[in-house]
Length: 206
Image 1: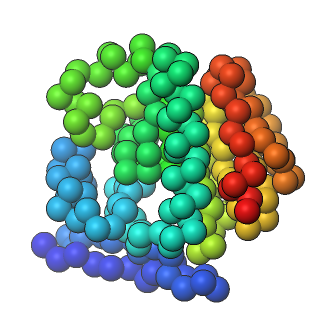
Image 2: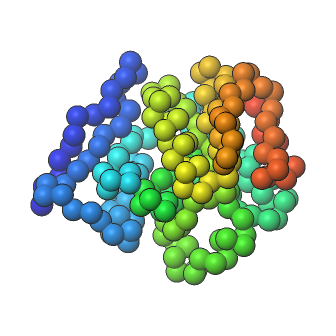
Image 3: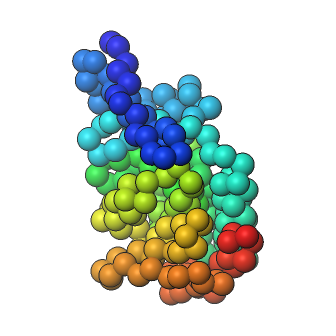
């Protein structure tokens, strides 16, 4: 079995990701894919619904710093709220369509999480979270991220924010609603899905 590295996706900032396939083609089980990711922890790996493996390099410092600010705010609120749990960008979810995605930040209701046996929680959760955030770095394709956000919603995510730091815009995705684009907001509320959660964007835009 040989690994085949397809032509990388390249933009004006350089290579942003690779699509890795195997020849002959094999479709890993969820457990096999989890083990594959653990053996390659230095890169971020996702799987699309067709079984293609997408390999992404580590982020730059600015993106990592911004993502840390977002996950910190979400984590503090989540612990105060007590109705769910938040996770960072290292967390994978197996969506109903078979894709395995790792949003930059996510949150899930306790009631849904508690239905997952403890042994399965040690691996990628077999469900879509209730809320996700994707942060657009300088090398990310906006179109690809928009498609990713739409896929989240189609697979059961209730609310999603695509944060475009460069252009100071937030694309808001909700189930059964049109996508909204907010221009340079100072803050954004997660109501009614995330009760009393407000993301302060001051440090994120700086």
